[in-house]
Length: 117
Image (cartoon, rainbow, N blue to C red; front, side, top):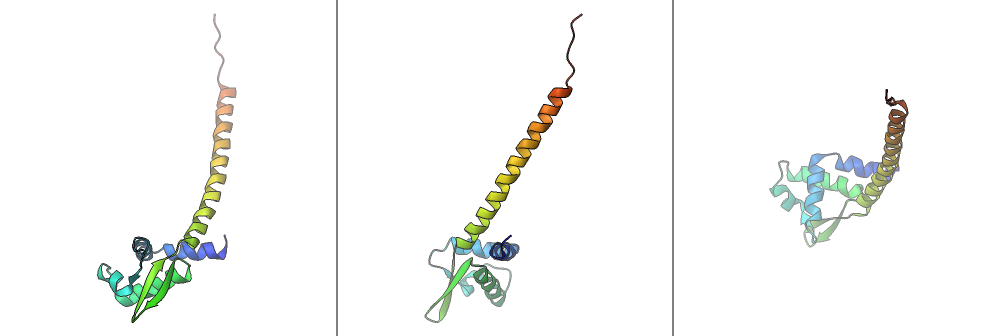
């Protein structure tokens, strides 16, 4: 697994960061840490740390808007992680289909033949 994908999965391994990322995805103009903290069960400072981890993973970008820092979701890193998963899922689908065919073929070869008397 590439380091970039590992960082994305690590960032999204925390439920608070996943919720923040989802909230950012729904806010095209971004949100501030203060806005995000209003509905959160953790402090604003904790929200900022989570947002920094999302930014380090390439899942969010911060931009200064006057005195505020607005965070927006970015999807390139998530898309790379999704592609990585899709490739692995396709490989496993092929393996499982081959295994299923092998089992069916083996069962068919072992089926008793009926004889009429």
